[in-house]
Amino acid sequence: MVKHLFVFLALVLSGLFAKAQVKIHSHNDYTHEKPFIDAVNNRVFSIEADVFVVGNSLMVAHSKKEIKAGNTLAQLYLKQIKALSAEKEYYTFQLMIDVKGDWDSTYRLLRKNLKKYQKYFDRQGSNTVVVISGNRPAANTFHKYTHLFFDGLPNVNYSPEDLKKIAMISDNFATYSKWNGIGEISEADKAKLTELINHAHKLGKSFRFWGAPDNKACWKLLHDLGADIINTDKVTEATNYFKIN
Image (tube, rainbow, N blue to C red; front, side, top):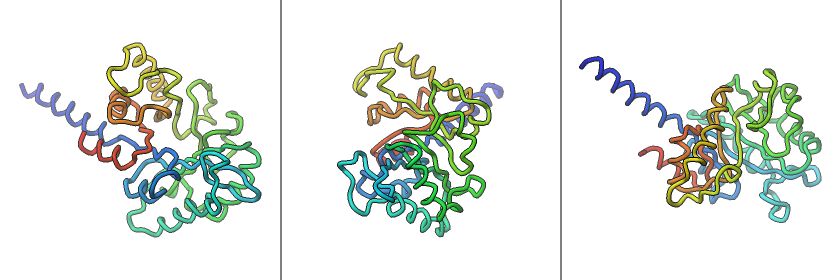
């Protein structure tokens, strides 16, 4: 009886621990009503900003036609992170920079931008980590980028030294399932999604699906399947959902 009680308690505690480990990724954060602010207030794990090279600036927007004057990476995020670092309750999160143009020209500007703020982007300093997604450099060069980490892909065989630079592994949900978040997902699709997640875990990495239905049914499904990071445009709603579920 006592043995069974201990087993039961262990299962309950492990379940609570799993729930506590849900990480929220603020997808296309710059499109939200209060970019950066809402994400940080909800203590998200990851904040995403898409960038384009325009002249000597890195502009934040989903597409070139949506670029607005003043919406630079420095103005929307880097300066905000610097200000946040002075707060007593500053916490560790990652800034994901999704590169929309070519890597070389973007990196030249990114390196220049980050130089002024480098002390705020240091894993050892328990501050913000910069993660590159989108148009990345060749995977076999990841280890050369001292101050950057990368969003990994499940179909790439990374060398041990490059794997150390992978912050997480991500893939497009729609590649593996056409489920729209309503009704039941097929067992075959579940198996495909689970296989990807388990593969990442074997590498010691967290997993994120992007392009998945952004609703409670899908958040629950992905969490139940073992996905560590929930990709969402509904940061407050998703955060509150996992607080009570």
